[in-house]
Length: 428
Image (cartoon, rainbow, N blue to C red; front, side, top):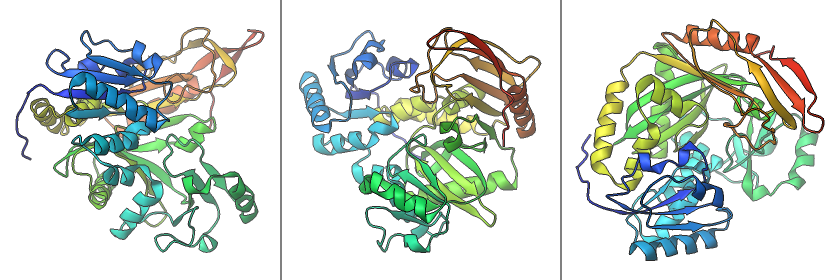
């Protein structure tokens, strides 16, 4: 790979919707060297920690793109122009692409980003390249030649927002009657449907430079993201080297080539069906939940730092971090995570952590008396656990032991009357 070195000062605008540690952009951008402006929600603005910020624009949310455009224009005026635009949330990638287009800023543009945001577009691209994906159709145009006729699909069907994330709005439909009843309730232009493929779901996460893996890891889900949204635990275990791991990485490489991702992070989900591997969906972003923390803790690699260096045009930093990630890719450590969903409407009182699980190295619990309101996503939930060890088996055993032994106490919001509840979840 060839990366030229440059550390000249740049005028950078950051779109930030995060109000937690993810908003610590001063770790990634030298605000003393570069002129940096931010567009933030009010809570996100309060989370910024850089000592030198040229300008801040605040918006109630980023859903109004006209207001977002005006805010970026105000930043441009304060900076005297914009050299780079940084956006890390999956929900902001398309808006950022359109802003780059409008303000002539280098970086990912809409025709590239749409392949990683629109689930119908991405599936058509990988199928055209000869990879397998579930039979699918965009609901706004179910007779499109780019898709399969709905009346030829087998139930169950999965109906999902074309640009959604974290399984929000995803539904499983088991019969034609259910499907016909659901359709009138949906904005069809925003949805697609696909055949349900029975099988284990895997994810591959990493970073590519010049079209080649710098670092990549394949993992097996315990339960699914959709089941997590429905109240079941979600776990993940990194695979040992071997034929399955190699096959998943090869499938990921072929998928990225089909979608023309040359530089950047990715989170790809793959189904191992009864007859083959199937493409499920992909994001040109850092994986969510505990994934970035595992890369940091196991391999010393901050995927967000890599991504910010790429987006901000800091070629010297990007080259240095790329070399470090490539070197770390040979490390054999394996890890995994477990996330327990929010018990919505309850209050967290306390927990008893499982003992004697050597692979469990980090537990994140909510603050005492935290009220679960359903807005926790993958972060402020009942519990998050991280694991590291020498093998896939060791990590899996540790996750199931945690599911068996973790205990917690909740209270009702209205009465604060506590009750003890175990977590003897059926992981299947």
